[in-house]
Length: 323
Image (cartoon, rainbow, N blue to C red; front, side, top):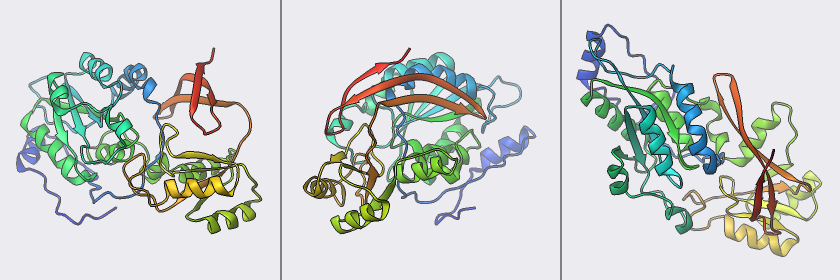
């Protein structure tokens, strides 16, 4: 169990309602100031298409509900940090559940190219959703707001918490676990955003991954290349990037020096954090495929597969869907 610096407050009327219904509220309140690094890109292009499957998978989930026995429950879902296809996602959610709650993360200092995809609170409210604000990735305060919202509506039955951005991946696991909703394993939460930890997790299951290590200077880069028997070209990237942001294919020491300057201690990475290290990776030659899949309680569904073509600077040139 992880302790909190703040007291855990459960409103009395929630306890009373649970007691009235003869239910036991057993909640794992893993609430603390969340400040670790995050990791795993979820292709936003397929979120809308796959959301229908997610809702069906969540249909039988046992969440935190406050509805009375005499009234039918109103299923609800929490969406965190809506971006890009958010209108499509909200329309799909509204057609499947009775209530949609959106959690925004307005103080995350994203690059301008990512901020342009984020809707305003006013635009979300026009879609008929309730908006909650999360500041400083504070899971404690956000969960408390959600509990207060649930307490006001005795007929609300939360079914799931879903991230719509890379930034939201980690906090969603924590919010969902707190509300006793389906969530990913908490011991791998950071590995879903940190590419180095992600490779470690994949390697632990016997799959081959590119050689990799964290570096913070040219000296550590050169020492690590010698240790791992690597030669140029190499890849240097931000540990928790997305959409190939801050990914550099380095052909020589000059390229590596420029890449390190762009990644380490820069004024905010792709997810709004200042990185203390870069991730050094072996450069892999060949055709790159992206296989998108969703897993829930042992069931794995492959939704689509793509073949990528990239430029010499590791930027996407084209992507063709596979048959």
